[in-house]
Image (tube, rainbow, N blue to C red; front, side, top):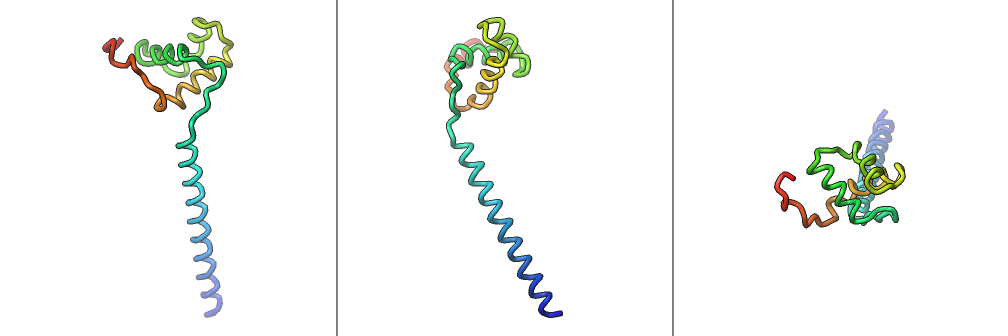
Length: 106
């Protein structure tokens, strides 16, 4: 019986080591993703991003409702409008917003 206990203990240590290694790798991947600069799709312009800012923060539109407004205003395809909004969401903290606060609550 003593050998079985020792083998179980070794298995527990191996499992803990494996879990710690897996957690470390996941943490490194998440950190790399967070530090990775988000590449801007070709269809996205500064005008689009500012327009979405205004829609969301001044007009009370949410990200789900923003694409049709982009289609209407800029004549882009719906798939491009969705790409624009997705990029807007992912890159918001990376971009400057020099207009923010200039118009009060819009």
